[in-house]
Figure (cartoon, rainbow, N blue to C red):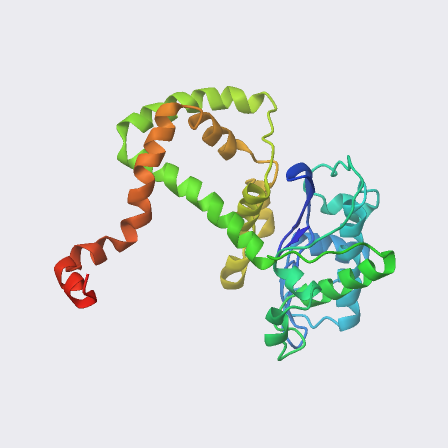
Length: 306
């Protein structure tokens, strides 16, 4: 379960293969509160839960910690519900962003990654920031505590992954590389322009066929980061409107596979793969161009006695 700021992305894996995925609106930044429990952010999923709990709060209100705990308890309960089967409760159904996860094999163990996972496993990241009772100005700590309680209560076999928050970063890096690479080819090569134009025609038909690419942890993680950044981190600066982005389908992970369809189609071409390899090296060393231009090779050889 990749538990971040806006969503929890669930995947079932067996022998290195991802068998099923799902996504639910459960995250640490869906309600923003400062150290005095003053609300600075309320996302739509939290509005739904508040309505179900017959609460009424607005930006700037002081919310009692008791009500914060009630809200995070509902989030945690919904997450555990869809981790172990289909969403049946009203709250869980409201929070689901995709279809229910398909449990095709027995679940041997559970693990968490993402920002909230750091607090679930009590890592140093949380301890170093524990100067206040709410170091991140959100409900992440409360959510982590409630999840730990449910894990113990249900006696779930929990394992700790090597990478938690870094798992998301790794996924973002992988996804960024493919997207930035294709952008460079589009700008620099007429040949690839024609290829993309032809592939785009096929992609439109392909997308209508209902094709869903087999997901991987890397690709899922990359999509998650870009979606969360859209309405997560920028929200601190300009209070991004959840409804605005949802209406424009800017973070419908993991349903939106159009980018992957196009990329897969493009890379079926040997010509595209050749261009990719040819340009990749130039892209990687571009940030160091000035360094290489100014490098005095003869002086370096003399200094190092080579």
